[in-house]
Image (cartoon, rainbow over all chains, first blue to last red; front, top):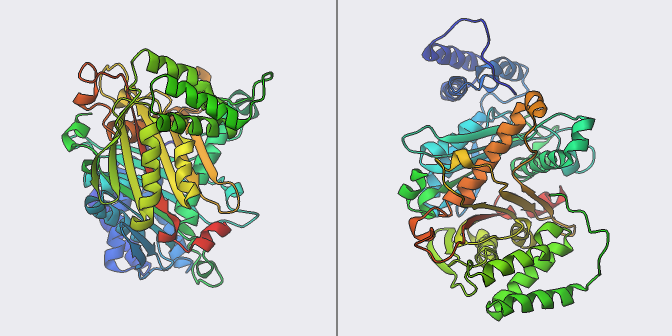
Length: 259
Length: 259
């Protein structure tokens, strides 16, 4: 956390950076259009100033792809669909691919149903959560995106919910930039004095973290038996939860945007 | 916050307390069945140990009713309905009445649509958020409940989002008690040293508070012109947001409950 721009460096135009990142992912075996999706999403994250989750991640992603731990050519599938919901399977690839499809689906389906939700599973890292909640905000809806990961099991999932799951909520605002909350569900590291002073702080971060793990993890099926090695060839161990709400199902849009 | 049981007091059986509270609300002019709803919800909150938001609140509620600031006989209405969504109007009464209806609606409608959401507006305090997210968890769904209130306006709503909005997420767990996160969106009061040490803590609580205000406040229509005095006779200045997600729209239920 803490996204300070680097103090020294070379300025690169976004289009050049996008092109470079696209070539890297394609070179690691990804389809051209998937490599393009990766480049678009990562550079967009950089441009919002979230340096930690933009192209900065490329090196780590490349390593996972080149070591054969993440599927470079996944076949993204919709496993099931009911009412305003969908379940996506990422086929062991990068999380950005099924997550951007899921985020687009909820943004569109919310118009008909008033709201929509989708989960994604069986994939690797999806990057910063804010870029997915923004799909909804850009379409004039309220968007939520949460992710979770699988870890070495010791006891039930909830008691181990200490990872820093990302959570984002975005609200559209028409002419102005959308309001986007994009954060990890951890607030502070352990500190005896602080715990003494504000114990609820820790209970709350544990609770929010657990909530993220249930939505983006358990519900997204990251523990499904056929998605855990050695059954699955890929280590891809993450899941996501995406929801969108149509503002005008609840309120006259003009009254909403006035606020 | 901080629900320690009182050190001294008289133990009262729940049924006797329920009966007493029901009679108080009925005596203040509420319909018998509405008074019963109030008594049921408040005593259930006590029984969960959330002393701050149970029958402890009765005195304040009675004062608002007796002073004519809250409508004792509201006609709860569904203002609109689209797909899996509904908008409830509380007609200036206690928030518990439209909120429990909305929470019941989303718990049921989520079965057909996979998920559902409702807002409530034009009402007073709805009490602790956890009792509404539990409607969904008791029906085997994941439930969310958020509330917000209107305040003296000074500038746009988001910059004033400092109130302690309640937020709750509940997950069903079959034979075991449900996992319920039930909290205010504030973590700690202002502290210069702590801000220096963990600035994100404050940004995050501000962000979560703002998110609660948009969902449970703006979207729920608490700023609608016809719901603000002097247009409205009642001061009822709160709104709520309720959502439920059907576990089995996303995952085999047995796999979910195993975790």
